[in-house]
Length: 225
Image 1 (cartoon, one colour):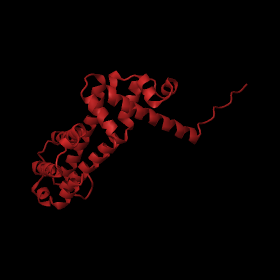
Image 2 (cartoon, one colour):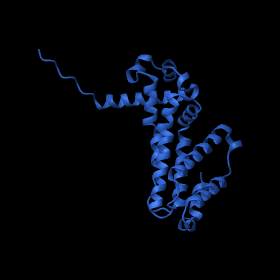
Image 3 (spheres, helix red, strand yellow):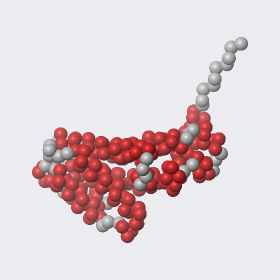
Image 4 (spheres, one colour):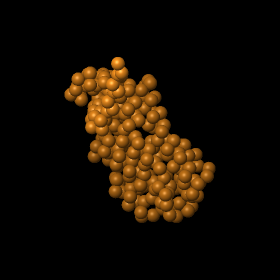
């Protein structure tokens, strides 16, 4: 007797499955942010999700699988990577201000993910190393490529170490947000702080052409953050 072919998943079922996975990932982010990866359990995530462990294990066999999905599927991670692409046609100072603005807006709207990353950064071991490679390491490389594009356009000096300055840029963004997240208004820097930081960065790596093009447009963009 011939077996009946398995029915294909309907679009409705596929969307429902995607929504459930997204809900599990969000619950995982919150639990990992509160307890750290090693301190969190699948029970904690099921409780946060208000679902049975059976539903959780149907989609993810281990909390490590949830961690991997956070690192690969998060809107913050993909958005930050996209934000480090050099906009075409903008001078260096304006492009930097735009990239900083977009990155900080993304971090603001994904605070749970940022807090999770901050907690993981304080830990040692395999999970912390994975977070570094998947996120910070990736952003460092993206920022270095960004700098290389402006080297090619003649706005960044050719002798500039792209990886060192790219890392400095990303570390500046994360430390700025971390201070604001921990200390609130008390630790909030004045709007001019970002302006001055961007100006110093352009002066440190830019050619005379880039410095000459640095004007009110870049300052207005940064001050709006």
